[in-house]
Image (cartoon, rainbow, N blue to C red):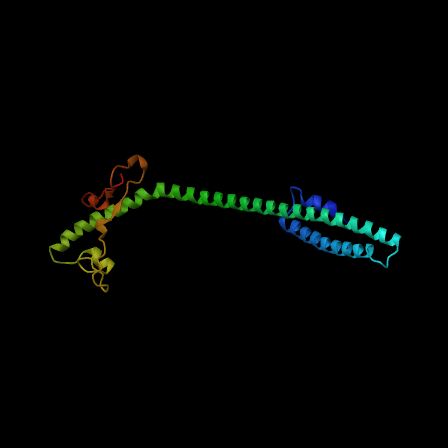
Length: 204
């Protein structure tokens, strides 16, 4: 057995309703309001017609009043459905945002764990490479050979860009990294190149 309009409206105003279902029902009620108002206007026209007898006029007036009251009730129900639809949409947006936030936090936590476990080793590798670069530079200087860094990066011996005139590239030996963990931080930056003589990690 099909549910009545009022039963469907009550269900749409409940906790388990979907926004699309509520919107469809609101459109159905809006169409019903239109037809109700049209009929109410027709009955009103009959009630004031000079051609209608007294009984017909009174019956039409009563029907017009009934239909006007119904249109008013339907309008209120339509407004309630539209408000309910907005509530559902807002709830859906909040739930989607919460899910996105949870996903972002999970990604962040995984990256934080990776940083904490991998970063010191990566900095250690950089420090070791720069230490070996410094030793190589001293050896190459004796024979006026270009630095391994210059060869690797395709720049000139003074770190100028090969084609963009006047553009000087920063040397890797100028690389600066902050202390990694808050408990190790002090004023200023740790100069990675400072470790080139020892090969130690400057963040330790």
